[in-house]
Every structure is written in structure tokens, then in C-alpha cells.
Amino acid sequence: MNVLIINQNKSDNIGDKLLSKMLCERLNNLGVQTKELGFAQTTEQNVTYEKANNTRHFLNSVKKKCPVLIKYLLNFGPKLREQQKKVKMTEYQAIVIGGGQLIKHKSVFLYCLIYWARIAKKYSVPFAFYGIGIDNNLTIAEKKLYKWVFSKAFFVNCRDTDSAEMVKSFLGAEAQVSPDIAFAYCPTQTTACNEKKKIDYLVMPYSYTTAQSAFGLSLLKIQYYDGIFKEMNIKKETRIVLAATTSSDAGECIQFKEYLSTKNVDAVINITSTAEELSNLFSDSEVIITGRMHAMIIAMLCGCKIIPIRVSEKINTFEKEYLLSSKRTISNIKENAIKGVDTLVKSLKQFQ
Image: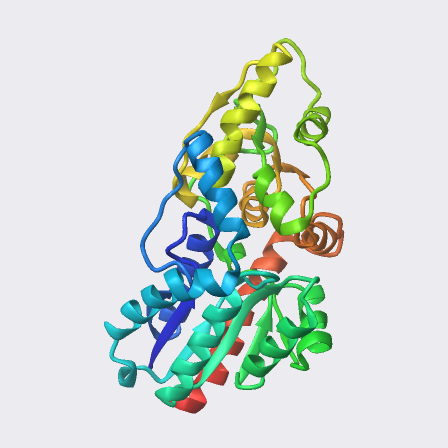
């Protein structure tokens, strides 16, 4: 059986690449052949560590003010059509969209999703959602459009109970729930619990401008940085490393390093571009401070203490379901993450 996997695997987000890799690996192990396509981003990107200059700030501000439909029509739509035309759709029995936070407010993702739903209809290929998350601030118009797409799906799976409840409430679709398939990842390097780690704090500051535009963060940047700084118990010998899973966060690392220098605190930026490099870094770290969900997943797998940067409802949900829950063990979470994909495959087999 051949299945198209459509998600943000081509973005610069290490977490998106990891979840796509783990989903494909599990499907392949169960006899399903997969091909990955970009959901919105169609060209391969990687994390780059560059401080935003005035020109980039201006261009980013223009992009953010541009209506999302115009962005889609002028940029994303043409690239999606170019990508899709290279694929022989008749060779695939189904499409799986996900995982990731694909149901978003004020985003080109809405129009990308409509595009893929229309492609599925055009070629009579059934499609499913797997491992998705949803924003809690969708407008009435967005809910109507997303609801139309979800009404066409034969299977829906969410990565957390809050998302499943919103999918039912907002979009009228029943969704199964299983942990993010990234939990099935096995770090190549681990450190014994009683072994002294080389890094006291691995800090991964979430992009301030993204937190403002996407989640309505109202703090001043200095207040935002102060909040992260207060989470660290810094002594003379404290070793601090900065890292990121996206380019926007990488730029924030550079600025946060400058902030730390005003406190007479030294920090080193570690450039990571893969989940493997990140997990190796985590294995050498005592405490991870991050606002990225997949960074927290890898940190859990590496046995690190986690301090979340609560920039979004997604992080609050993850903290509630995994970090604060005493009922879940890593082995149990891994098992349920794998079982979720197994359930998807059972549903896919009806189209063989």
C-alpha cells in the first residue's frame, strides 16, 4: 500500500522533521510505503543562526501585515501546485495529513489544507488526519472552512485530549487521541541518572516576535527575558548552553546571549540541526528550559528536568498531560504513541 504523508517535514523545525520521520518509520514497519510532501513549505529548510537585522525586521513586519490569503495566492499556492504536479497521484491509495499544529488561526495553513482536500477529491484519494493539534482561538469563518475539510476525512487522530475536544466542539469531528509519534524516538546517547551532566542549563528561548504575533504575548522583551532568567539558579560555576529547534528561535538565542552578558553571565550557543544532535546535547544537560513541544519530548526521553516557557496553550496542554501527570511513564507513552499509528494502519487497510 502506498500512502502520501503531508506535513511540515520540509520546514526548518527539527520537531516537525522528527515526527514525520517517526511516522514514516512506523508505517514502513507495518508494510505501508510512504512518500513525504510539504504541507505548506515545499523546499527543504534547516535551522540557521542569524541575528535579525533591520532589513529582515522590515521584511518580516511587511509579511505579517500581508493578508494570509494574499500570501497563499502569491507564494504558497503556486509552490504547492508545482510540488504536487511531480507526483503521480494514481499510485497512492490514501493521504495522511499530519502530525503537527496544522489547524491554526490567521494562517496560510487554512488555505493549504483546503488545497490538499481538493487534490484528494480531484483524484478520488481518501485522506486522514494524524497527530494534529489545533489552535483554541479560531474565528467563526475559520471554523466553517476547517469543518468542511474535516467532514471529508475518513479518520482523525489528535495528539492531545484538548485538541480532540476542540476538533469535536469546533469542527464536529470525532477524533482518537494518542501521544505524538515523536515519543517513539530512541535517543542514540543517554546519561545515567546519577552521572554528573556537563551542562547545568540548556536554554531554548522561544522567538519573542512569534510569541507576540501567534499567541498574543503581551510582555515586553526585557520582561520575557527576565522571566526565563529567573528560572535559573545561577552560581559561579553554572554552565549555560543555548540552542534552538527553529531559525526564529536561533535568532532569539543570539539576542538572549547578549541579554545574559548584561547580567555578567556567560553562555555558549550550540548549533544543532537534527534531532540526533539535539538529543546528544540533552543527554549532557541537567535542566532544559524551552517553549517547544518536541524539544520537551526529546528532553523527557533523555531523562532531563524540564522547565516550560509557557508561550502558548499548546505548551500548557503538554505540561498538564505529560509533565505534571504522575500516571504516565515514558514506556507507557511510547507504547501508546506506537499503538496510535497501528490504529491508523487498520483504518488505511480498507483502501488496499
